[in-house]
Amino acid sequence: MRRRLFEPEHQDFRNTVRGFVEQSLTPRHPEWEQARMVSRDAWTEAGALGLLSMDVPEEYGGSGVTDFRYNAIVTEELAEAGLSGVGFPLHTDIVVPYLIKHGGDELKRRWLPKAVTGEGITAIAMSEPAAGSDLQGIEASAVWSGDHYLLNGQKTFISNGLQADLVVVVARTNPAAGHKGISLLAVERGMPGFERGRNLEKIGQHAQDTAELFFRDVRVPRSHLLGEEGSGFRYLMEALPVERLTIAVGAVAQADAALRATVAYCRERRAFGRALAEFQHVRFELAEMRTEIDIGRAFVDRAIEELNQGGLDTKTASEAKWWTTDMCSRVTDRCLQLFGGYGYMVEYPIARHFVDSRVARIYGGSNEIMKEIIGRAVVAGD
Image 1 (cartoon, rainbow, N blue to C red):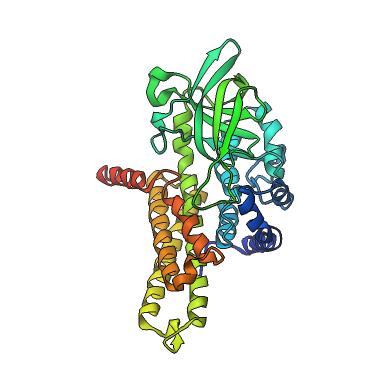
Image 2: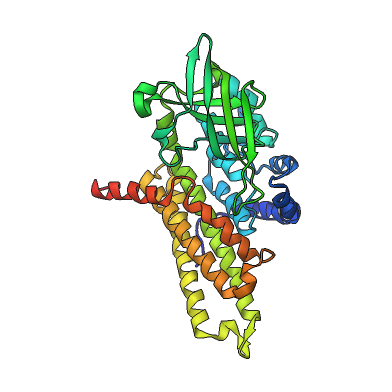
């Protein structure tokens, strides 16, 4: 099915991204998987090509492009190439927008130019050992003390956590105010009391540095408060639809890549004297997966249009995230099965697609939470 989402200028941008992925990222990804971290020069190379934080205003060194189709292209090309460890979308789509929308001028002038060039890598610290999808269970605290906040707490499962130069930390500034007592603080590398834990071992996405973060009496100046004190939960809720759409974009692209690899394999692999693709059961499997991917892509493309028009709501983003990530898990599992024993070998891309895609049903809010959000909207008549 022909996509109608993109214009010629988007295809030119895709060609740039694809060339960069093929020439500079894909050949090095195996070494990054071994190191459990993407090298920083990959970030600065991406920045030099204009692939990071495109929506940063020109006055802060960006291009000021707010068309999410460009963001989607970067996510798609990384996902289709199986580059699960490259954290550009997290940086561009999720973290930097908090600085653009809610950061003070001093913070913007210091950090947004670096976000564009890739010299300043960002992360967001929400999850804690006892609080994941339930953001109201956050225990990290930031107490006002004279002319600064004293930040204490622990975060876990933080993507870009080891490399991040600036971390947006979700903390309680008023424990008695419930969700209205949550604020966002920008914490810089090198602030006394800010420490990194281990690079967490995961079943997939091995090139992505995913860390524990510790904050012990970290002095955070007032200028590093994002927006208004106590408005952090609202800011998070406003931003989560974009995060979930980014996850959905990646899920569809990864499922598509897995299917294309499987079709090629089934054409070549022979069993009982004929190619796998000649068996009716195999063709039915491929037909079902192709249809699911096309349906998911049509929905996600429409959601991107809604976002560009300023109308992407929480329910639609949750539907996209839940359905596409479940679909991607089904597709990668069925594709692996068609590869047989070879599908279980790490040297085959389908094995990596299988393990790398699994976490998408968990992060960004688990799919069970997505269904709860959608269900509440349905009951309310939305």
